[in-house]
Length: 279
Ligand SMILES: NC(=O)c1ccc[n+]([C@@H]2O[C@H](COP(=O)([O-])OP(=O)(O)OC[C@H]3O[C@@H](n4cnc5c(N)ncnc54)[C@H](OP(=O)(O)O)[C@@H]3O)[C@@H](O)[C@H]2O)c1
Image (cartoon, rainbow, N blue to C red):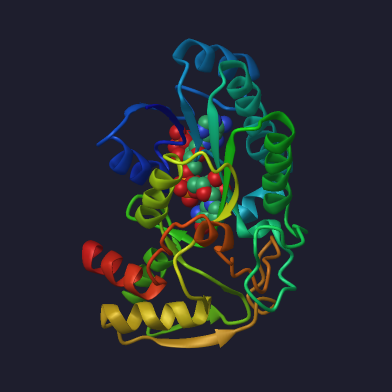
């Protein structure tokens, strides 16, 4: 298939290219070659290339930055995706869009399925929800893939930050009252590569298996990386950041499993592989 990928310079974008280039013709794009906020450029580019599938991994992903640059957040994460959906409708391309656990408010107490009640509490989450709504309004053939707590070799992420801090700190404070599922971008990219072979369109939650708090995740990272660091549990309110985060956003990969796909491996196995790779 001919697949256009936006955000190909990003953390997930790199892994999507890695996995999809084996079996597909790819058109990787960056913010320079295809600015998704430029409605005319998006329409012209997609009409010219006529891809079978567009995978949108482009986004303004700085969650705190979104609170300070709201206009940019809504423009990239909301309008940008609307532009892609309109172009996909014109060329009859399927759109795969990556969304987030931050569309939920965090009040759930058990894993949240695809039809769980939406209620973003941050600008980032609200801007990502606008994209989901636009896609559902404009297109019939789409996959909205909500994922969470991404890390991979090609981007800034929590495990990398922890390991960097461990080089100069013997104690690190980490939030314990936010629970989710760390997800390794090659595993997510593999999942997406399977999804696009199917015609079972809709919304999917897709993360590695299991769940933990940031604090538990940090402890596990230090354990496998063999770092002698004391992790001090703190609350999210003690660790003040501009954007509020959901305190619980574990995603039940219900639709994924019901459609017969194999659950992604546990977050513990995935982080082991990642640390082995970057050591
Ligand atoms: N990171 C997480 O923890 C997380 C969690 C849940 C969901 N997600 C979602 O997963 C997806 C991938 O995340 P990621 O962490 O891989 O992102 P990332 O590393 O921050 O990459 C995002 C890419 O978006 C591109 N971009 C930004 N503005 C653009 C524009 N106007 N036009 C075209 N491209 C633009 C950037 O391209 P250039 O480099 O070319 O400027 C960047 O490479 C995103 O949709 C994100 O919302 C992420």
